[in-house]
Image (cartoon, rainbow over all chains, first blue to last red; front, side, top):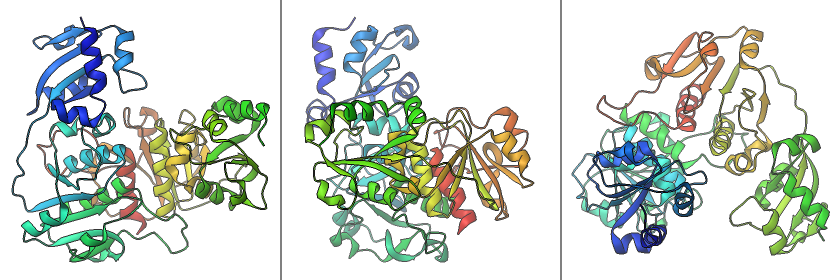
Length: 237
Length: 237
């Protein structure tokens, strides 16, 4: 059973400040919950309309009505779990993805999922980026957040701390399909609305763009996760 | 000024059956509205908290509160317009994108935007696909729907009517980066949850997949618009 206090507590976790305060976050859906259980994150509690699905875990019955009152989904799918955050340490790699000021949670989730597909298990986000434990990020990442770790850091300091080539996706760059990339380096992607910040642009060794098929095309920008997916498919396969 | 009847009418347009009945749909946001004005679609009426932005058009004052009551956006941005649908005729091309059972409106909108970037101005959707005049599709397409035309048709009949090579994105296919594609053909993409329907799979000459960077990666699928973006970047640039 779920208590009134637990319901109140889970509702509070929809705000970033409370997730940080309690070091906890909410995951919904049987498949994604099971992926988080099989990850480095530590399960706090599961609430399910069918708790037998999670035998062996702290799984509690919740009514459809109660679940609806705490779910972040339009159509709650029957299961919700609270997990404890883990403090990960950034590993040394020869390839990094850095996101500067990404604010759309669906985009961050899709990027996390795409990074995993292309074997990138760490993402650096500028501190003004959307929180990766936001429910929309978790849902869009389709479980990949349980394996891809997101670090919030100052991107300039991060670049300075590494002696690596820095690439940036930028509309004024050279065509990506004309460039021979190294497989190592830091790749910076800016927000859809503002691109890469000026102070970071100055640190970029090579600006790269994905061109349109021809010059008469009117749309002004490519969706950010798609730009990243095209770049990663070129470098990481 | 906006009347109570107009408010009631615009609310009704959030349902597909009413959009079909009246042959009208709703667009929000100054930039996207202006792109639709400059397209083949015929403007019915604009409602704006600042109607002078649209001088020369049938632009009516609406209060923030009234707008909020009819907007499909969480944070309405001040302008909403009703447009009349147009019955487009499919043009003969040497390259087509066909979507089989796409049901996520955000994905369809992103695909429309990505198709435009890569010079694909027509999309065939199976009849069970999400309606392209759904507000989430229009917002995610970022104005591209004003220039990219979506046709709802039976994909099997469409394939039969063309004597072209048929490609399909499928997890059991050959690596896309090992294949030399023709620039002409029909490319079929299925839904994220069900893939391409069985009866259509049998019509596909070449199944193609985007591989993971290595075999130990756990995520099971790539986001659909990203798969499409990667394929189009390979064929259309």
